[in-house]
Image 1: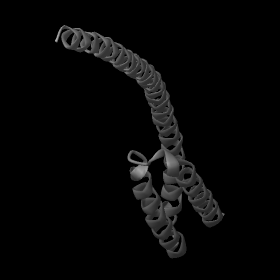
Image 2: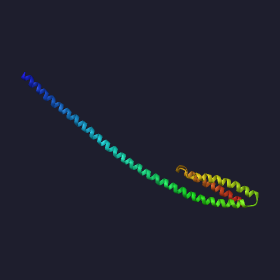
Image 3: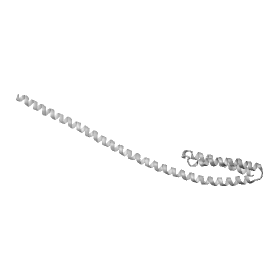
Image 4: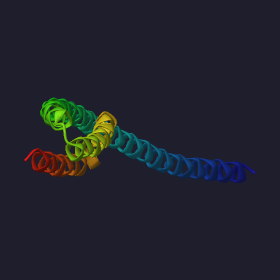
Amino acid sequence: MRTFVMASMFALVATGGACKKREDKQMDKSAEAVRKNVEDVDKQKKDIQDEQKDVAKEQRELREQESELAKAKADYQTSINARLAKLDAKLDQLAARSDTKSRDAAANLRSRRDGLKARLDQIGPMAAEGWKDFQKDVDDTFDTLEKDVDSALK
């Protein structure tokens, strides 16, 4: 009986030691997994911070571009208003003539001028993508109209 008890105790001690080693290995694996997860979280946190910096930079650049576009629109509007004033003066000269042909031409040209002015009123909401095309189209229309007014005045 004594031998049996001793053998049982020895088995318990041997098994207990093996369980302890297995538990230690399991703990080491868990600790390693936690450490790796912490490293992954730290890396993701750094990536997010870098992306936030990029977004902030892009927002600054966008604000600068919007400001430049607004200035370009204002400058263009000023130059267009000066061109319109010159065109109006020429149209007034043409309309002041006594012949019917000149007055009819003035009325026709003033109608075209009014159409151009209506297009110019769209300058405010004009998006950056269409700005250059809008500007070119308006300039071309202005050039043609001014040329036609000058021809009518001759």
